[in-house]
Length: 259
Length: 259
DNA sequence: ATTTTCTGAATTGTTGACAATCAATTCTCA
DNA sequence: TGAGAATTGATTGTCAACAATTCAGAAAAT
Image 1 (tube, rainbow over the protein chains, first blue to last red):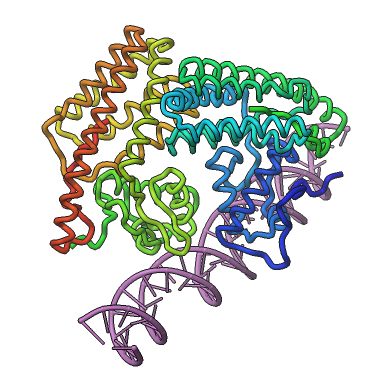
Image 2: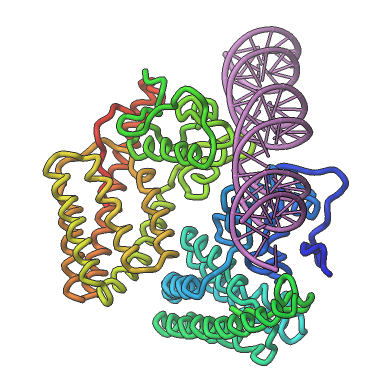
């Protein structure tokens, strides 16, 4: 019933008439696919047809291919020779590895931050947490999830190591692949509260406590996503039995994958 | 004086007559460039002309371009729109970040190893260190450097986290970009001895000691590479004044960048 | 003599057509 | 009816030519 899984929905414009090209076109392709993944409009394992991407993003084939290579290296899509591109599927084992890696790297950045964060950095962190809370309270779940995801990235940026920041960015971007469930609006403030606690520990200069809180936060998130995954698996099986084609791609409503 | 910086030198065959294509061609392009970097036959900052890569690797332009994109994502080359590809240059700050990242990630893998390594894993580590020593003693410096580089990768593989292993692989591959100096054969067994100590600590189950040794090892390597870099800078300036074109690309002799 | 502008070669980026490959359907035969 | 082979449709991979861009060097103006 949904012939076009790539729906701009918010800001991203559809083509413009003539097929465009260049690095900006590649960036647009990446953005279209990433937003579709973030919005859970396309399920892991879905084939990405170049022609459909072309008519959806208005980019030429070279730009599309470059974008797909880009996303493949980021771990969001898988490229099989002569078979094309599919949205990457994370096995439970891979999900565990991703969270283990995030805990290792982010804990180090958090410890670093607790030892050298500036007043400006603290202000930015607190402002970020405040924006998160505000987005939650206003019910702007899309923005809330976005900000929540970016919080960990901000910590990495403030820690000052671009190499580790880049790695964390890739790992965070793969998070939407881990959960594939309906929203559970019960624990809306969990993530935000954990973030506030981490910021408080950083402000207090207690790196060990901040790392401990971050570990607990990520472990809790991992458990939630695991539970969501199992629920989604059940839903997927039911849907398959019912004859639905691409899983529980029910609608446009916001999903929760707090970080 | 050296019109062809891409010289197979060891195993990699030149084309074969007809231009080949496919994923294997892309792999060959990557291998040619990587070996040239590892052998210090091309200096950081060198422009990579697609046509020259074509006649050097015998691959078509599509394969060459794909390979360049691959290497760009690995951080070994830099791609500028409409300007082409150059061998990536690591600033001193970036080098420090890379080593900080390696210490963070590898220390975690080393701690993990100390807690869960199997007898088979220990045997593989000891065999690896033995091969390193043998290569050093036999004067096969090329193999020695290769094995030395792979040692850290083997530890990551044994630790069982493919995500972190992939990150470490990329960081290790960027190491030849950090030093650009002539060989210093004085401390030939430093790296190897440090590796043996780390393996001993892992075998003893003392993760903290193994992590400490690994940190010291990597810090020492960082200092050596930094000193080499400064020396290379002096040499590069002299060479530029003398009119040499691509820095101290003296010959085929092996360089030291122990890991 | 120095700066500016212009022209030309060299290189990269893109396009459209063609070949190779794969999945699914259909057809044939037991 | 069912299993296997051949076919068809669709999609990806590749290639060669074309367009766009950049860089270097020369010519001209200040």
